Image 1: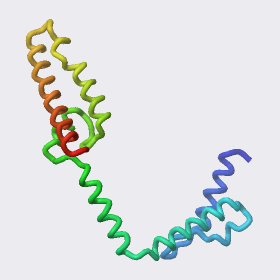
Image 2 (image 1 turned 30 degrees about the vertical axis):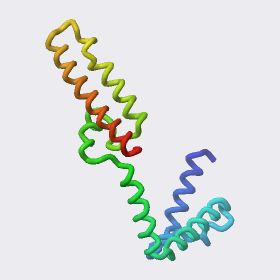
Image 3 (image 1 turned 90 degrees about the horizontal axis):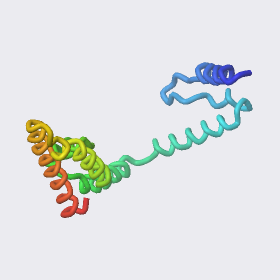
Image 4 (image 1 turned 90 degrees about the vertical axis):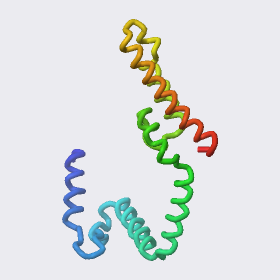
Length: 147
């Protein structure tokens, strides 16, 4: 039997044995002796789901609160969002990503590349000044806040 035949049997078996009760779990009894790895996987999944359901909500709340505090402490202020957008990187991107984008943009918009045309030279000078200023603001924030 080919790969697709076996895949078809697995999908068919999965669909034929699906329970429509509130737990929406597969009947493990119908899988016995068909595929021991699959039986083991379903048992592990059931154990995990049962443990997760028995968790107390207070523990989840405490974890989320601590996680939110640590994540929020590393995020730059909203005033820098436009600077990240100007560099073309996601808000709060790491230092290496910002440097790479900064260098790439300067290669494109550096005034020395546009010396032959006065209008383009002026636009490139303005654009490179904006890029430099945005990168400097991000770098200064990282230096002062350890971000």
